[in-house]
Image 1: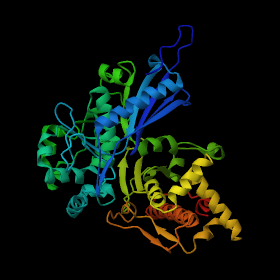
Image 2: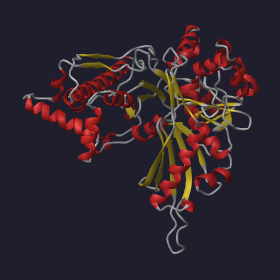
Image 3: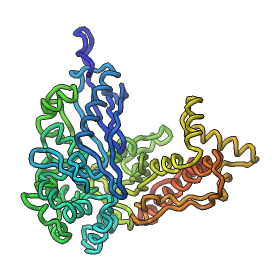
Image 4: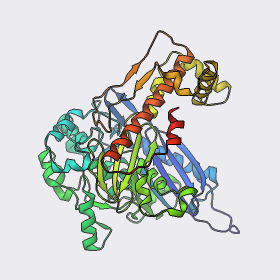
Length: 484
């Protein structure tokens, strides 16, 4: 349960709640007015994987959110009356609900619980290829091609393969928009989610906003010709009711705030303002891209953020940079108008498997269980143990830097396709240099080679973006440390 109300003789304070739903868990964080973290908690989320299909349950996700929020309030000793506002961020997964807001299955299994197609699901590769063959002008704003991780290919897959579910769905929503809707009853969509994952044209929306002097209005950035052309013309019916009749800027207050039902479930007070959501990586981008190191504080200006790239890392990694003018970069998503930083164009690169790849490499090695036990006995993480082993191996072999350990082992990290800049979801990963060795030292080398492969993938993205107009500055000192 949330903490009880503060004593009457204690000064009142304002606390703000952020909820982040990732691939594996829901996290809740409580912050004071200065941005100091007062407490946080997380709760795991169930996930179903079957080949290219990856699914979750919105019901399970909401229960995890409620558990995380209550636990965070309890740990931080924050009373429900102290929480003055909240917002959601989540993966760009696709949620299907009917007219009663009940889940509709998007699974071959027919299990109604499984109503979320997770962002990393690659079932719609064929649909994405067909959409891209249309050569629609709107594709220019997706790096010249939609990815199967975006929503239009997934929607087309459901229409072609699960006709009963397709006919039942009343709302198709990005997960972060669904969370805001679940909390407020207002199904206004976020400019962040719709622009980045649904082909909504943010610059068209902005033009309409400037003309009407309003930041909350009917969606005006949908390209109806595009939806008709790809075979999803039924989604434009009712002023795009199923995919977003109203689109607002991130942070815009929704409805009348937290509904009584949601407030009871979360252990909070009804009516608390709830802001329009963000995609999880983009929420991180907002927090990081305008952070200024002390060494740069003196010359900080509006152009400074155009020299930076934000990496938000988890199961995958997103690489985000902004510019004052729109830059069309083959194989890199965008340009997206005001999708992260208001009035800047966003370029979004990425690697579809980074944290997930490290887990895969480690957990599928013969020495993994033994090393995990060693790490637990030393009360350190498995990664810390592997790093210590690499340091020791470097000294034992009298090498001047750790990277020399992997001169005969190399990893191409495209185990879940290449999101950027090759933009090939069918790309495959490669491990070069394997032998019959299954020792813990061999696992350490494989781990290092994987980290290096991921780092070189990031370097490829940065250099590709800079070759097409970005001016991201690379600190050679830190890159050298990362790679070596």
